[in-house]
Image (tube, rainbow, N blue to C red; front, top):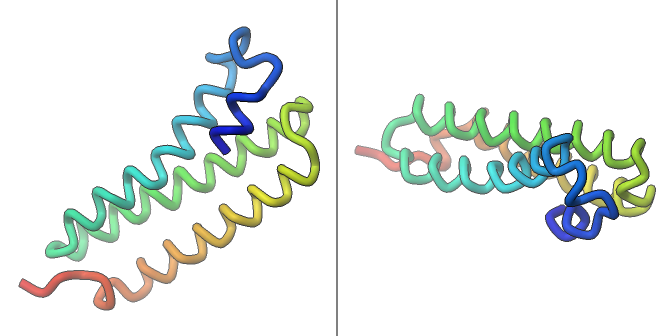
Length: 106
């Protein structure tokens, strides 16, 4: 995702118009996941951070939609990235559904 963002022909001119958001949301997925694992002892906090990560992944998919429509991404790149984010969202939902498999016991 970040490589695709950095290759965009309008990167400098539209940084505030979406590309910065695509980069921020895609990085935020892993950042929120890292925070979730630091909160494993507290199930509600763990689930909350996983939920934040899921929301950022979904936001990234919206930015991918815009990138495709604006011609920043090829159809092949879009489909590959969108499918990867679908998988990530699926894993996050599974973790939220069964947090006991991931949470540390006090």
